[in-house]
Length: 400
Image (cartoon, rainbow, N blue to C red; front, top):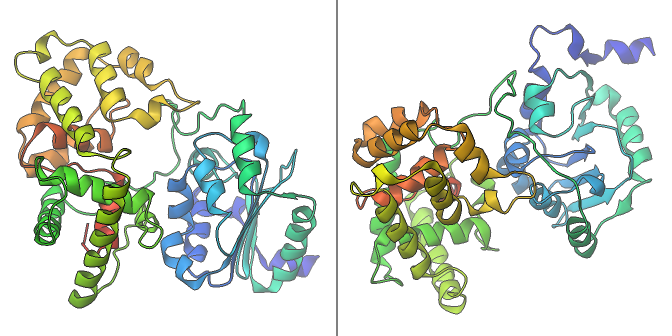
């Protein structure tokens, strides 16, 4: 036992409380063979893709395992559970599971921290980590609880979600004070000016292959294109480049070939499935934005009007969430004068000024993606920017 203790890293005696998160992030980037997780509570895709560097390790096709408790499922962690039903993946559920373990090839962590925003970024947690000398012991511990779990398939997962009464408020309490912070998704990697240059180059290349929506701004078609790569493409998914800040390393020939293949795939999809994602959706969003935020109307708009617009035209995924009454919180916790002032500034700010405005906004529940989408709807010369945009540009080899 003494030899085992000597070979463990005891997080209690480190000087920083963020070491569990940093340890997981550092060692996950080297994974080639396996990522095994046991965690009764899990968080969003953001945490999973960032902490475990999925875009980097997925190409090695490691074995992914997740042991969790489906009693804790909500609409917000459904997608991450679904990930573990893919190729080289296994998902099991164990009622009353309380163990938290992370096995990354020959490196392991046993900890009190769930795979959640609070567990990895907010709470004061504790744990021990083992290296290759301890792998057999840690693997045996994991396998013992793994064998108690029930294998989960797609039908079971859908049924669990439909029957769930679990309310997940993970990460949406403005009073939570994180020990460390996740990187800013939209603005930390590059300036808005750099993003705009890369986006404009993609626009030129895209247009050279022909348009589908010839009666609307090009940026709306590109938004649909990048949305397709993120949510629907089976052959060219850009989701691996969400929250990783990595850029697909391609030479000019590879970059041109990939873009051509993606556009052809998207064109075939949008023509056959245009009922779901069509030109009229974005044109209607634009019309509504120009109406409520026009110089004539913005003075008379109240917080309820603005939150209704944002919910119906931008943040529909939040208002559909079982955990988060977004509209009411936005209207209740903001000052109407501040909100209007912020939007007026977004309407006229230069690309250089937009960086500062977006980063320093004090409007609650009005994050970077929301602000950038408002900009894209209101201003002819600027695109819609969100997680789909960034992920798609990185996947296609553009440096954002």
